[in-house]
Amino acid sequence: AEAGKPVEKNKGILSGISIYDQAYNSALEKSYVASIDTDARENIARIAEESNGDSEKFDQLSNQYLNGLRGGISEDYQDRLQLSIDPIVASARSQVQSQQITRQRQETDERLVNNINSAIDSGIRLASLGDTEAAMASLQSSTESIKARVESGAISQAAADNIIKEASVTVESSIGRAALKNTYETLGPIAALEYSIKIRDTPLKGFTVEQQENLVSVLRQDLNQFMQLDSIKEKASEDALIVRQDKNASELFLGIAEGTADAGDIALAARNQ
Image 1 (cartoon, rainbow, N blue to C red):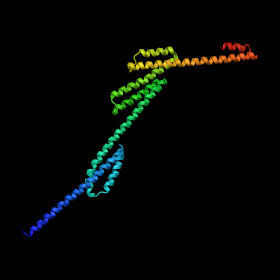
Image 2 (image 1 turned 180 degrees about the vertical axis):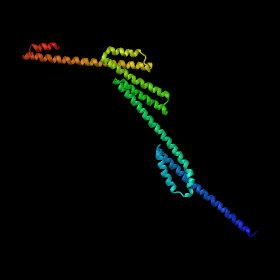
Image 3 (image 1 turned 90 degrees about the vertical axis):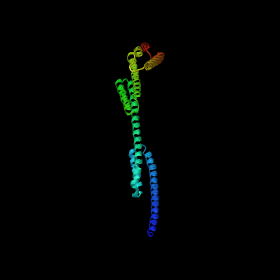
Image 4 (image 1 turned 60 degrees about the vertical axis):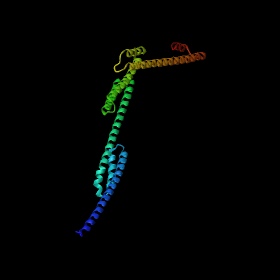
C-alpha cells in the first residue's frame, strides 16, 4: 500500500498538469477562433459596403474572401469557423439584397416619373398643335404610369388622384387654348370672344372654380395677343402701302418731268391709290 501511494500522488500531479494544459490550449483555440471571427466580420461588412446593393457582386467577392480564408486555416478549425462565419455572411447578404431591392424600386419609380412628365409634356405640345386625339392619348399614358406608381407603393392613391387631376387640367387647358386660336383664325375675333365667354359660363368637368377662372384668364390674354398681333400686322401693311404709294408718286412725277410718263401711267397710278 505504501509503495502505491507515491504512484497515486504522481498520477494526481500529472492529472493536474494535463487539466491545466487542456484549459490553456482551449483558451488559445478560443482566442484564435475569435480573432478570425472578428476579421471575418470586418471583411464581410466591407465587402457588403463595396457591393453597393449588388447581390451578385457580394457573392463573388465574399466567396473569394472565404476561399482564401479557409485556405490559410488548419482543417481542425474549419468546421468551427464555418459555424461562426455562415451567419455573418447570411446577414450581410440579406442586407445587400435589401439594398438591391430598394435601388431597383427607386430606379423603376424614376422611370415612371420620367414617363409621366414626358407624356404630359407631349400632351400639351400635341394639344397646342390642334391634335386633340393624340393629346388625350398622351394624357392616358401618363395616367397609366401614375397608377403603376401606386401599385409599386411609391405614392398613395390619394396622391395619384391629385396628380391625375392636375395633369388632366393642364392638357385640357392646352386643348382649350388651341380651340380658341383656331376659332379666331377661322371665324374671327367675335367668335373667339364668344368661345371664351362660353368657357367662362359653362362648368368644366374636372376643373375647380379657381382652375376654370385661371383658364378663362389665359384665354383672354391669348385673345388680346391675337388681336394685338393682327393690329401690328395691319399697321405694318398700311405703312408698307404708304411707302409704295409715295415711291410710285415720286416716280410718276419724275416721269412727267422727264417726259417719259404718259396718260396711261397716270391713270394706272390713280387706280392704285
